Amino acid sequence: MNLTILTLFPEPVEAYFASSIMAKAVARGLVTYRCVNIRDFAVDVHRTCDDAPYGGGAGMVLKPGPLAAALDSVGGDRIRTIYPTPSGRPFRAPLVHELAAEKELILVCGRYEGIDQRIIDRYVDDEISIGDYVLSSGELAALVIIDAVYRRINGVITAESLDEESFEDGLLEYPHYTRPETFASVGVPEVLLSGHHEQIRAWRMEQRIAKTRQMRPDLYQAWLAQRDDKE
Image (cartoon, rainbow, N blue to C red; front, side, top):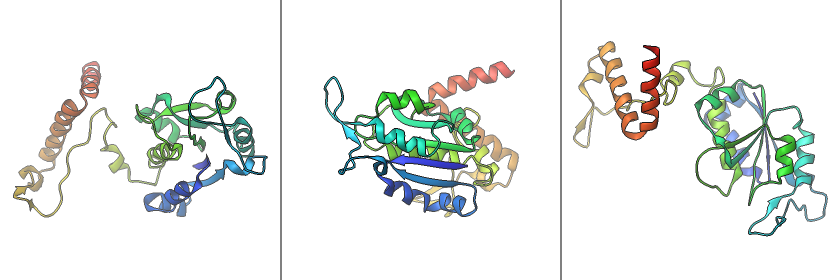
């Protein structure tokens, strides 16, 4: 997958691609990326990329000129373009799978009060919200989307690890334990020490159901309905 990130602040984006699992994915050629500085497309001596909003109000808005020029330079009219914004549609597992199937993605990192609506109307294919809250950094929101998507690319993470993750079948993930066997006077559940794989599988399923019911009753009810439909 090729990822293009348009930003006013490339440093945190560059750092992300140079660390951990992402760095390995880049080194193996599973992911390629380019970080485009929107300021490079400003036409005035001060490299101005924002201005006050029409109609008044607090904050500043990213100007359409530099953004349009930056998008034109990377094929924004033909490549699926994402704008992370609190007013977008929720970012959930089905959308992660959908985006992971793309060969190329462009992400536009907003700042301040956001970007000019004419850029959204002309270039943006997906307005995506990572949660019901507001960030000051569009780079953070874009990296959340990238992190969720790239790990679904074949070869980045083992299929077994992905299959057991939260949300993959409507339930949250079961709890995990590792050495030492006893920590702070609390031991590991006996079933995990038994070596009985079927019992372990059943225990983990019970834990997933219980945790989902407690932490995400909305997911639990949806899972029950889906199970009833299958039966």
